[in-house]
Length: 146
Image 1 (cartoon, rainbow, N blue to C red):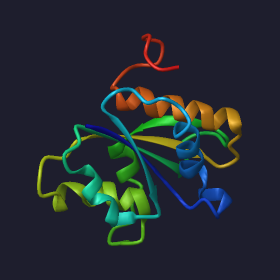
Image 2 (spheres, helix red, strand yellow; image 1 turned 45 degrees about the vertical axis):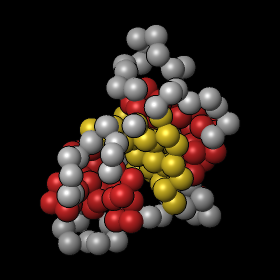
Image 3 (cartoon, rainbow, N blue to C red; image 1 turned 60 degrees about the vertical axis):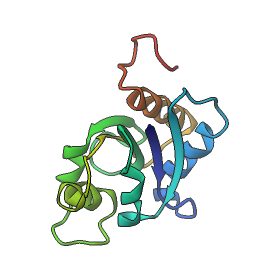
């Protein structure tokens, strides 16, 4: 199973990219074996979503990885490196940093689609496409999802 987990707070504009991408993807047909999850602001409560998954793609608002309004695919390790040590409320970076230490089973392949503040409808569409590419472990331009 492959999962796209969109996280964030839809009521806070600067944190609403993940839920907005979830809304877009929920109206599109997903490839077989890809599950879409609204992760909300689950934090460490998202850990069970990794159980039984081969690949997990998180979609979340990020800051400082690209120019404003951009969507990009990030390695999980790069996002984890942004975590503040011992910040249990540190969101996705903290979750990714502690994952190897708290996981009871094998850790799935993880990718992050980050959306910088100032996003537009085009940015969200690109983020949705990147999430599908990453879920399929494809490369943009290789004939996979558009």
